[in-house]
Image 1 (tube, helix red, strand yellow):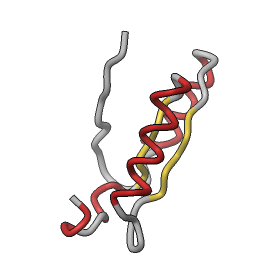
Image 2 (cartoon, rainbow, N blue to C red; image 1 turned 60 degrees about the horizontal axis):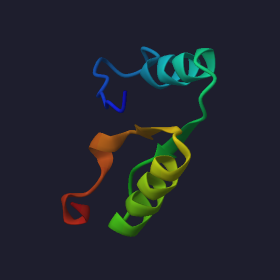
Image 3 (cartoon, one colour; image 1 turned 180 degrees about the vertical axis):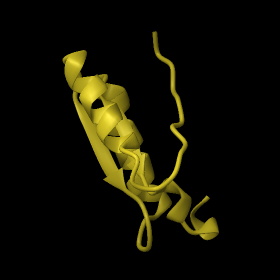
Length: 71
């Protein structure tokens, strides 16, 4: 099953930690990518390329902070 999801909720409720804990319970690597100023499409591409090749999970932390020019 290669499915994606997007967690939503108020700040500080443990969304990222929940994803990391779920990955750990399933014996999977979870890579947390911190998004924000300085994030560019090359960095996003490298992160996605790496997790696709290894089967790891990727959690884009603070994805809503990526500048519109990146997309």
